[in-house]
Length: 261
Image (tube, rainbow, N blue to C red; front, top):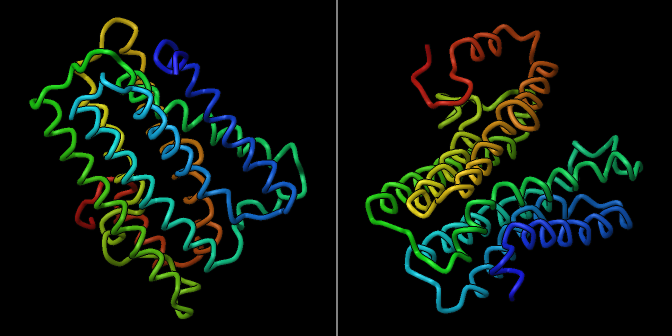
Protein backbone atom coordinates (compact mmCIF):
# COMPACT_ATOMS: atom_id res chain seq x y z
CA UNK A 1 0.00 0.00 0.00
CA UNK A 2 2.97 2.32 0.55
CA UNK A 3 3.69 2.75 -3.17
CA UNK A 4 0.04 3.65 -3.74
CA UNK A 5 0.17 6.44 -1.17
CA UNK A 6 3.64 7.77 -2.01
CA UNK A 7 3.66 7.24 -5.78
CA UNK A 8 0.04 7.02 -6.99
CA UNK A 9 0.88 8.06 -10.54
CA UNK A 10 3.56 5.37 -10.94
CA UNK A 11 1.32 2.79 -9.31
CA UNK A 12 -1.59 3.68 -11.62
CA UNK A 13 0.68 3.34 -14.66
CA UNK A 14 1.90 -0.11 -13.59
CA UNK A 15 -1.60 -1.23 -12.63
CA UNK A 16 -3.18 -0.09 -15.89
CA UNK A 17 -0.57 -1.80 -18.04
CA UNK A 18 -0.67 -4.99 -15.96
CA UNK A 19 -4.44 -5.38 -16.38
CA UNK A 20 -4.38 -4.60 -20.10
CA UNK A 21 -1.37 -6.86 -20.72
CA UNK A 22 -3.30 -9.75 -19.18
CA UNK A 23 -6.34 -9.12 -21.37
CA UNK A 24 -4.15 -8.55 -24.45
CA UNK A 25 -2.54 -11.96 -23.98
CA UNK A 26 -5.96 -13.57 -23.57
CA UNK A 27 -7.45 -11.78 -26.62
CA UNK A 28 -4.41 -12.55 -28.78
CA UNK A 29 -4.31 -16.21 -27.76
CA UNK A 30 -7.98 -16.82 -28.49
CA UNK A 31 -8.31 -14.17 -31.24
CA UNK A 32 -11.42 -12.83 -29.54
CA UNK A 33 -13.01 -9.39 -29.35
CA UNK A 34 -15.12 -10.27 -26.31
CA UNK A 35 -12.72 -8.71 -23.79
CA UNK A 36 -11.35 -5.70 -25.66
CA UNK A 37 -13.98 -3.18 -24.62
CA UNK A 38 -14.91 -4.63 -21.22
CA UNK A 39 -11.23 -4.50 -20.22
CA UNK A 40 -11.25 -0.71 -20.67
CA UNK A 41 -14.00 -0.01 -18.15
CA UNK A 42 -12.81 -2.84 -15.90
CA UNK A 43 -9.38 -1.22 -15.59
CA UNK A 44 -11.02 2.02 -14.43
CA UNK A 45 -13.17 0.06 -11.97
CA UNK A 46 -10.36 -2.00 -10.46
CA UNK A 47 -7.91 0.91 -10.28
CA UNK A 48 -10.44 3.19 -8.60
CA UNK A 49 -11.44 0.47 -6.14
CA UNK A 50 -7.81 -0.22 -5.26
CA UNK A 51 -7.02 3.48 -4.78
CA UNK A 52 -10.12 3.87 -2.63
CA UNK A 53 -9.32 0.91 -0.39
CA UNK A 54 -5.67 1.94 -0.02
CA UNK A 55 -6.61 5.41 1.21
CA UNK A 56 -7.93 4.11 4.52
CA UNK A 57 -8.56 6.83 7.10
CA UNK A 58 -7.72 9.66 4.69
CA UNK A 59 -11.07 9.20 2.94
CA UNK A 60 -13.65 11.98 2.93
CA UNK A 61 -17.13 12.09 1.45
CA UNK A 62 -15.74 14.18 -1.45
CA UNK A 63 -13.29 11.37 -2.30
CA UNK A 64 -15.94 8.70 -1.83
CA UNK A 65 -18.27 10.64 -4.12
CA UNK A 66 -15.65 10.94 -6.88
CA UNK A 67 -14.72 7.26 -6.53
CA UNK A 68 -18.36 6.17 -6.56
CA UNK A 69 -18.99 8.26 -9.68
CA UNK A 70 -16.12 6.56 -11.55
CA UNK A 71 -17.31 3.13 -10.40
CA UNK A 72 -20.88 3.84 -11.58
CA UNK A 73 -19.59 5.14 -14.92
CA UNK A 74 -17.39 2.08 -15.45
CA UNK A 75 -20.18 -0.37 -14.54
CA UNK A 76 -22.60 1.34 -16.93
CA UNK A 77 -20.11 1.47 -19.81
CA UNK A 78 -18.72 -2.00 -19.19
CA UNK A 79 -22.17 -3.56 -19.02
CA UNK A 80 -23.26 -1.86 -22.21
CA UNK A 81 -20.09 -2.78 -24.15
CA UNK A 82 -20.20 -6.40 -22.97
CA UNK A 83 -23.85 -6.75 -23.96
CA UNK A 84 -23.12 -5.15 -27.34
CA UNK A 85 -20.18 -7.39 -28.23
CA UNK A 86 -22.13 -10.50 -27.20
CA UNK A 87 -24.94 -9.43 -29.52
CA UNK A 88 -22.82 -8.46 -32.55
CA UNK A 89 -20.22 -11.21 -32.07
CA UNK A 90 -17.12 -9.31 -33.19
CA UNK A 91 -15.64 -5.85 -33.49
CA UNK A 92 -14.92 -4.86 -37.10
CA UNK A 93 -12.20 -2.46 -35.92
CA UNK A 94 -9.91 -5.44 -35.35
CA UNK A 95 -10.48 -7.30 -38.61
CA UNK A 96 -7.06 -6.19 -39.89
CA UNK A 97 -5.32 -6.46 -36.51
CA UNK A 98 -6.36 -9.73 -34.86
CA UNK A 99 -3.76 -11.78 -36.71
CA UNK A 100 -0.98 -9.22 -36.35
CA UNK A 101 0.43 -9.04 -32.82
CA UNK A 102 2.21 -5.72 -33.44
CA UNK A 103 -0.91 -3.98 -34.75
CA UNK A 104 -3.08 -5.62 -32.10
CA UNK A 105 -0.74 -4.63 -29.28
CA UNK A 106 -0.88 -0.95 -30.30
CA UNK A 107 -4.57 -0.88 -29.40
CA UNK A 108 -3.87 -2.27 -25.94
CA UNK A 109 -0.97 0.10 -25.34
CA UNK A 110 -3.19 3.05 -26.25
CA UNK A 111 -5.96 1.71 -24.03
CA UNK A 112 -3.67 1.26 -21.00
CA UNK A 113 -2.16 4.70 -21.55
CA UNK A 114 -5.61 6.26 -21.84
CA UNK A 115 -6.80 4.81 -18.54
CA UNK A 116 -3.63 5.97 -16.79
CA UNK A 117 -3.80 9.51 -18.17
CA UNK A 118 -7.53 9.98 -17.62
CA UNK A 119 -7.15 8.75 -14.04
CA UNK A 120 -4.24 11.12 -13.25
CA UNK A 121 -6.21 13.72 -11.25
CA UNK A 122 -8.17 11.05 -9.39
CA UNK A 123 -5.19 8.84 -8.61
CA UNK A 124 -3.57 11.82 -6.91
CA UNK A 125 -6.73 13.11 -5.25
CA UNK A 126 -8.07 9.85 -3.82
CA UNK A 127 -4.71 8.89 -2.27
CA UNK A 128 -3.90 12.37 -0.97
CA UNK A 129 -3.68 12.58 2.86
CA UNK A 130 -5.67 15.82 2.77
CA UNK A 131 -9.19 16.36 1.46
CA UNK A 132 -9.28 19.69 -0.33
CA UNK A 133 -12.87 19.19 -1.45
CA UNK A 134 -15.47 21.94 -1.14
CA UNK A 135 -19.19 21.94 -1.83
CA UNK A 136 -18.71 24.98 -4.09
CA UNK A 137 -16.79 22.75 -6.54
CA UNK A 138 -18.18 19.33 -5.66
CA UNK A 139 -21.86 20.07 -6.34
CA UNK A 140 -21.49 21.57 -9.85
CA UNK A 141 -18.81 19.01 -10.69
CA UNK A 142 -21.02 16.05 -9.78
CA UNK A 143 -23.97 17.70 -11.53
CA UNK A 144 -21.92 18.01 -14.73
CA UNK A 145 -20.79 14.40 -14.35
CA UNK A 146 -24.41 13.25 -13.92
CA UNK A 147 -25.50 15.19 -17.00
CA UNK A 148 -22.67 13.67 -19.03
CA UNK A 149 -23.45 10.16 -17.82
CA UNK A 150 -27.14 10.64 -18.70
CA UNK A 151 -26.35 11.93 -22.20
CA UNK A 152 -23.84 9.15 -22.84
CA UNK A 153 -26.18 6.44 -21.56
CA UNK A 154 -29.21 7.64 -23.53
CA UNK A 155 -27.30 8.12 -26.78
CA UNK A 156 -25.63 4.68 -26.49
CA UNK A 157 -29.01 3.04 -25.88
CA UNK A 158 -30.63 4.92 -28.77
CA UNK A 159 -27.86 3.98 -31.18
CA UNK A 160 -27.90 0.33 -30.13
CA UNK A 161 -31.67 0.05 -30.54
CA UNK A 162 -31.50 1.77 -33.93
CA UNK A 163 -28.70 -0.51 -35.14
CA UNK A 164 -30.55 -3.60 -33.89
CA UNK A 165 -33.28 -3.13 -36.50
CA UNK A 166 -32.42 -4.78 -39.85
CA UNK A 167 -34.20 -2.04 -41.82
CA UNK A 168 -31.66 0.48 -40.49
CA UNK A 169 -28.57 -1.42 -41.66
CA UNK A 170 -28.00 0.97 -44.54
CA UNK A 171 -28.90 4.15 -42.69
CA UNK A 172 -27.11 6.39 -40.21
CA UNK A 173 -28.48 7.16 -36.74
CA UNK A 174 -30.42 10.42 -36.88
CA UNK A 175 -33.08 10.03 -34.20
CA UNK A 176 -33.20 10.94 -30.51
CA UNK A 177 -30.10 12.81 -29.35
CA UNK A 178 -28.46 11.92 -32.66
CA UNK A 179 -30.83 14.37 -34.33
CA UNK A 180 -29.03 17.20 -32.51
CA UNK A 181 -25.46 15.89 -32.51
CA UNK A 182 -23.53 13.47 -34.70
CA UNK A 183 -21.62 12.23 -31.63
CA UNK A 184 -23.69 12.89 -28.47
CA UNK A 185 -22.11 9.94 -26.64
CA UNK A 186 -18.66 11.53 -26.94
CA UNK A 187 -20.06 14.85 -25.74
CA UNK A 188 -21.40 13.05 -22.67
CA UNK A 189 -18.06 11.33 -22.13
CA UNK A 190 -16.22 14.65 -22.08
CA UNK A 191 -18.70 16.11 -19.59
CA UNK A 192 -18.13 13.12 -17.30
CA UNK A 193 -14.39 13.69 -16.92
CA UNK A 194 -14.44 17.49 -16.86
CA UNK A 195 -17.19 17.36 -14.25
CA UNK A 196 -15.16 15.08 -11.97
CA UNK A 197 -12.05 17.19 -12.52
CA UNK A 198 -13.94 20.23 -11.21
CA UNK A 199 -14.45 18.35 -7.92
CA UNK A 200 -10.70 17.91 -7.39
CA UNK A 201 -9.71 21.46 -8.41
CA UNK A 202 -9.60 22.85 -4.81
CA UNK A 203 -7.05 20.18 -3.85
CA UNK A 204 -4.58 20.98 -6.65
CA UNK A 205 -1.26 22.46 -5.62
CA UNK A 206 1.84 23.16 -7.71
CA UNK A 207 2.63 20.28 -10.07
CA UNK A 208 -0.76 18.72 -9.28
CA UNK A 209 -2.21 21.08 -11.87
CA UNK A 210 -0.49 18.96 -14.54
CA UNK A 211 -3.12 16.31 -13.88
CA UNK A 212 -5.46 18.40 -16.03
CA UNK A 213 -3.85 16.27 -18.76
CA UNK A 214 -6.47 13.65 -17.80
CA UNK A 215 -9.66 15.33 -19.04
CA UNK A 216 -7.68 17.20 -21.69
CA UNK A 217 -6.29 13.95 -23.12
CA UNK A 218 -9.65 12.20 -23.40
CA UNK A 219 -11.12 15.32 -25.03
CA UNK A 220 -8.36 15.57 -27.62
CA UNK A 221 -8.39 11.79 -28.19
CA UNK A 222 -12.09 11.80 -29.00
CA UNK A 223 -11.94 14.99 -31.05
CA UNK A 224 -8.86 14.33 -33.15
CA UNK A 225 -7.59 10.72 -32.88
CA UNK A 226 -9.62 7.57 -32.21
CA UNK A 227 -13.10 8.95 -31.71
CA UNK A 228 -14.84 11.37 -34.04
CA UNK A 229 -12.34 11.26 -36.97
CA UNK A 230 -12.58 7.46 -37.35
CA UNK A 231 -16.37 7.39 -37.18
CA UNK A 232 -16.72 10.34 -39.54
CA UNK A 233 -14.48 8.61 -42.12
CA UNK A 234 -16.41 5.37 -41.72
CA UNK A 235 -19.76 7.13 -42.18
CA UNK A 236 -18.46 9.05 -45.21
CA UNK A 237 -17.40 5.78 -46.86
CA UNK A 238 -20.79 4.18 -46.24
CA UNK A 239 -23.15 7.08 -46.93
CA UNK A 240 -21.04 9.74 -48.69
CA UNK A 241 -22.97 9.35 -51.94
CA UNK A 242 -26.34 9.78 -50.26
CA UNK A 243 -27.68 13.35 -50.53
CA UNK A 244 -29.79 12.84 -47.39
CA UNK A 245 -26.71 11.92 -45.36
CA UNK A 246 -24.82 14.93 -46.70
CA UNK A 247 -27.76 17.12 -45.70
CA UNK A 248 -27.80 15.56 -42.22
CA UNK A 249 -24.06 16.10 -41.87
CA UNK A 250 -24.36 19.71 -43.02
CA UNK A 251 -27.24 20.57 -40.70
CA UNK A 252 -26.25 18.63 -37.56
CA UNK A 253 -23.67 19.69 -34.99
CA UNK A 254 -20.65 17.40 -34.88
CA UNK A 255 -20.47 17.37 -31.06
CA UNK A 256 -22.58 19.83 -29.01
CA UNK A 257 -26.30 18.95 -29.13
CA UNK A 258 -27.89 21.85 -30.98
CA UNK A 259 -31.08 22.35 -33.02
CA UNK A 260 -30.50 21.29 -36.65
CA UNK A 261 -29.44 24.18 -38.84
